[in-house]
Image (cartoon, rainbow, N blue to C red):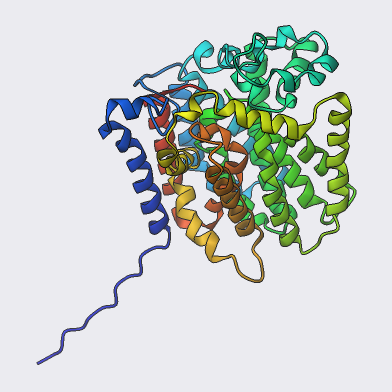
Length: 440
């Protein structure tokens, strides 16, 4: 008798565990509010929790262009990323990312999806006409943070340092008034973050990783919120801060400019102090601390200028925490959002990013892989922000500055499966954009 030959089982691809966990987490975050009591669900203040929006299947002018961009990136993206000269690749990627984000916004229409988002009564543009004296605005900014005062700032202005409002005031002063110009600024600066990520990776001797990740960065699900949220600007500014710090490893003079951008980030959003984590990852990857002192000096220049103008960052932060609990955050259940926030992040970075995470984490060993370090740093930054309890809901846009670095995990996906993962990214993004009317 012949013995049966037992063939060894094929190993499970390492991409599957990450995808399985991310998919289960996201499914649970969407299902729990559907099966919970109406009273509990009402305290989420998010009709399509974990996404801040409402369920509303719809199509729009951007539907066909968005599908077209997706098809082109899936078909030609991986090949173009591999063969195009570096600078041309960056330009093509940025232009494609602009088209992708704008098309997704236009699914909701010009006014609802693009030009009108930042003119809402809770948004920055609502306060711009009232700022007649910038110096006085900075001096009196902290005094208007708390709610229930006659001159309290609107929700978004009060929740951020004065740099965010100042940006839109300056945009208005140079003649670029209204929601259309504000949306264009968000689109241009926010989309440039993908170029910054690629530039940073190349500066850290990870050009091949940058090329592999660029198609995924270009067609990131996060683009749903890039054309319509000031957080896209925050992502662009801090992404270039990290990129310039990476360049400063070989060109130390650039470090001051990196520090200035990090400093500006502190005055755009309080939570961006956590971008110190990716900054440290860059120094570890570059095996040097030479850029540190000039970068700190650059950041202190910004701190000194704003402080002398009359705004003390720590005062603003403590008042914002108090204002945070004057609003709906006091009712939003931490027990749900502490993990549902992560599900919202999955929606922003896509299942392909989750698939790449095991590969990225496997490379966290000596010699250090620069891309893996930046991905791990992004994860740490997200966990810090999440556990703080100061980001309950709306993290699909609030964490854009961290998400763009998390997307670099896609560089660890096999080249042979890149198009399949790009298809999954596009499908998930298009389904989300066509079924949920997002608030941002």
